[in-house]
Image (tube, rainbow over all chains, first blue to last red; front, side):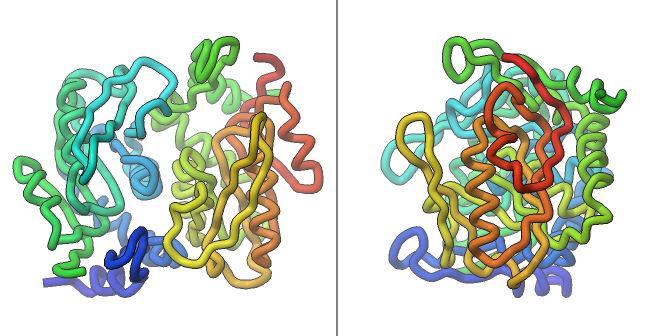
Length: 179
Length: 179
């Protein structure tokens, strides 16, 4: 059951048909960001859900995960760690590859991004097939971090993303059951 | 003359020699982000500089500009508008191309990102040759926005970036006079 805050968030997200390709409905959160009350409400819901969980570091997934993750890190007074596409981070990195529909891709994090055992909340705007998110969680673990959970503004619940994150605690502010 | 806060920010930025190519010293702000006091101090300096200027919208340049821009938008209660690489934004966009060392590149913003006449602060992490930043400012103007100014955490002052932004008000938290 959606709360009033969640319904307001859903209404602030715009549907773009046929993006990035025909037949796909893109859930566009830039309209949410254009409304500061909704942006702050989304941040407050994430903050509230995780604030008693001893989160020590916010990791945001490039690029839209930076938007929510960094603002959340500022609110919580936590370090912010960017998880980026391969080749973007300048110092020593650890990488994790994941499967795409055709081929593979990989993400990276700085090897010294946090201390051993740090409690990490991973943040992104949207969960779809879950490849990137699952790789991000594995990356955090392989680097010695503990994944407290993963927070997403949107979950495309008709795709298998959530099932790839079953071993973790997750938060989805707005869920779509069909395209 | 640098303030104590600016000196602390400078010390939190890591130098990575030979990235992305030999002879370049990359100024890595991920170490600043790993220290929440420094991240918040950077945000506070930007907030303080622009808070009396009637800023109505924060525009952040992909991808690291999202980190500072979004947190600032949350602080100021402003809409956040992402300026992205070509092809990333799903709705109708306006584009602006700019010259690279070899060839050209372009950035985009949603055509309906803000109302006509809105007062925009553009935020990015680093000013180098200024191509992207000048294109972002032109993009905002062509879309009917007024550029209140541009704020950067780092200015590589030995490169011509600042000269390309002469008609705008700018803020640089940390400046490097040589590589």
